[in-house]
Length: 400
Image (cartoon, one colour):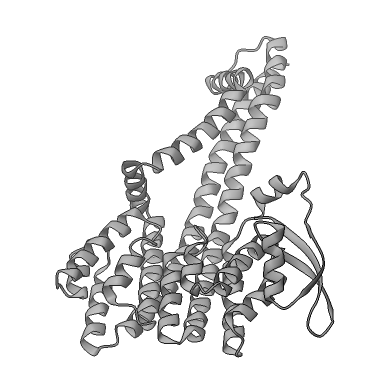
């Protein structure tokens, strides 16, 4: 949507400058007049040649949503209206988030509810987010819901950062190994090969194998690059299909250590989100249906949909969970306690805290298990190169 720069005077005769989003100059003028402003100048902001490039990289991130929710919660709690809060946040936010906040401001000023305004921002706010806001609006406790939502989003963000941070070192080492091997094969080994040929030495089998791999890498180096990117593209395309997504997800869950970690992460997200929805007044069935579409695992999404179907038919939540093999027995047992005591949301919060703690330990175990494994693979690769390169040189020197 076009952005217009304006210079105007308010009812106190103060000169104001700013930006306003509108479809046309007439609409921008109408928006400013509705706010009681006398327009001095109004013009469309210019577009640079880099706007399209900036739009590709300037996207709304999870961190932006977390900051927006926390700041909005603070402002609503302080007594500001939604429109006043949006107007302040629009000036403080990053360019990508400014557009979203500006759109929300216009929708709410036009009489649309906050939840409906969020729904129109396709792909930005999750169904869980919108359901919580809708519940908070209907119950008149939007400030409390936003505070809980902000806490939940911050926990998710921190946990995701911890998980990614633990895997950074192994990934960097693997990439470095691949780069070093490629450089050795393409640039170093061919020079040694020419030296061996000049001496006319009889080469060991390991060296011949290394030279053959090097020759292939030199002649068809582009195949490695095309094959690498092609494999990633095909894997992503296959995962877009229902069968491929299921197969890949099932395989990931069977990987030692990592599979356990993934299950614990799913349990953390599931129990925390359901507890948050229940605490906001959302019914159990609606909460399960919403969460079943938000989990990052097709296996668990399918299982949770089956649970929702069973609950809809009158089966208790605990019994429905116990019928799904993907969920650990502890989950159904704790849910049964929550149903008996009438404190299901509190029990689920405790369950999420338990699995969050367990998953943090699993992340450390995964990192600890990968480091020696990488060192072993690296040692074998380096040892092979040393033996294959040094052995012919040793044979040559022994002949003199």
